[in-house]
Every structure is written in structure tokens, then in C-alpha cells.
Image (cartoon, rainbow, N blue to C red; front, side, top):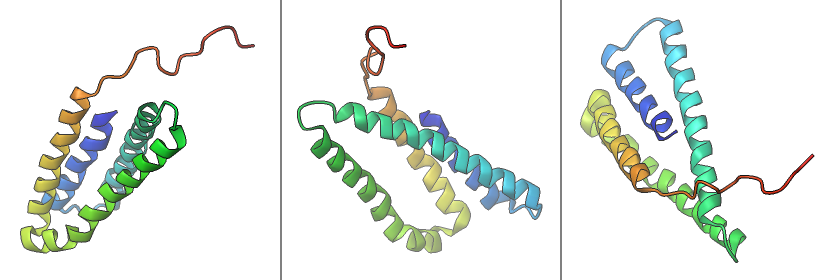
Length: 123
């Protein structure tokens, strides 16, 4: 699921390099990005729920979502300046390299294999 967040970055790198004029290609790339982001973001939300498990679930979950929002807001504040400085292709190369951090951090995460499984019989 971490790859579904990282691979769409390569799609935008392709769009920046190739600059296709076909709406079919562009639409496919954007759809791939939206699907990947949605799928990967679901994993991120579930991990935040797992991380927040304990006595103060709601407080911990709200702090997690605040850090999540900040992690999107801060890069967004400088993205335009970076793109103007690096150009589209350079910007998306930088984004692709940053996506490696997503994969690296995910390799360090340990989740209890029993988390989320039902216990007992439910009909």
C-alpha cells in the first residue's frame, strides 16, 4: 500500500518529461494517481488508528490527523516556489526521490498481525 502512494509520483514525472497531448493518456495518469493516493491514504488512516489505540484514543487520533494535515500543508506552501526554481521535470524528480522516504519508513513500521481481527463468533 505504501507503493500505491509512491508510484503515482512516477506518473507525474512521466507527464512532466513526455508532456503527452493525448487526453486518454493524461486521464489515465490522473486516474492512476487518484486511485493510488486513495488506496495508500486508507492504509495511512488505518495505521493512525492502530497507533492511537490505548486509553486516550480520540486525543491521540486527533494529534495524528493534525500532524498529517501539517505534513501536507507545509510542503504545499513551498511547492510552487520549488517548481519555479527546479522546473516541472526537476520538481517531479525531487518528489520521486522524496517518495523513497515513504517506502523506507514503511519498512520500519511493525504492526501486530492480530490487530483488527475479530475475536469470538459473530453472526
